[in-house]
Length: 395
Image (cartoon, rainbow, N blue to C red; front, side):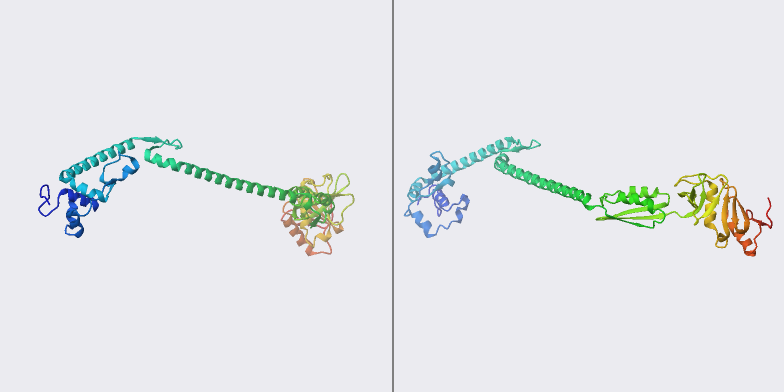
């Protein structure tokens, strides 16, 4: 083997090393030292008995004669090994320089393409903010965008269907509620029976109201309106009307308590309570109530109030004690309440004065009556703290 152009006395030439590196796919020439030159395969290659592999450009098969000459695209053929060996040391140096030059040109070309790629921009028409994207992103987006649009449209459709289902469900519930209320409020469920409690004196006047309440829809009956009508009855102090599904109603009332009666200027008798409210008008005298007299009696209608004197007389009638009440026949009053007197059996007259402090005055009267129940004086005056008794009547 010639020593010219060799790397040393015991080393093969650069051309041989270059071929060896290509065969073992070693990219760095400095790694040639790692090859075992004493192996049988190297000895056989160096002796020239093994045919040289032929380099075939893979790109030429597919891309024509102008493909890249880089060794990365070659493959070896057995008939080219000897030809390559005959090229000598000079051809190996030239190829190395050419490879370096091509590698540098490819690097510069890649850098130029990368710079141009960065300068090239695309504007996404579908972006709400007018975003600017690079060509690589635009290339990827070109394939992704239709799928995104389809996915977005599917999501919108799903939301629309879900919203439509909710609207239909709510509308159906409303229809059912309205239909149910219409049925419940119809005459199908109406009041057929009405029960009345605590009505003694007002039964006759309640009957027209009971008739009107019968037949009303159970759930739509105006109970408040019926209560107002009932409370306008003079005898009624308070009323309560309730309905019970499906077909009944109840009326509970509290009546006023009658206290006395008096004959009005029209000769009709009025029944009044302790507040002087006229509860009823009757033609004859009611014997169950204390009689009140006046020189000029008024003629109020039922539901109206009598003058102050009659209010005091009614309060007196309610306050009479068990020992005084049986012997009291009449309560005489002035219309304005300035003078109240009791007419007892046997002609005894009790003067009470005004309608104030009636309870204290009755207590004084009780003291006089307890002293002698068989023989009462003709006149007793309890209008003041000092009780006076007159045995004989005077004018």
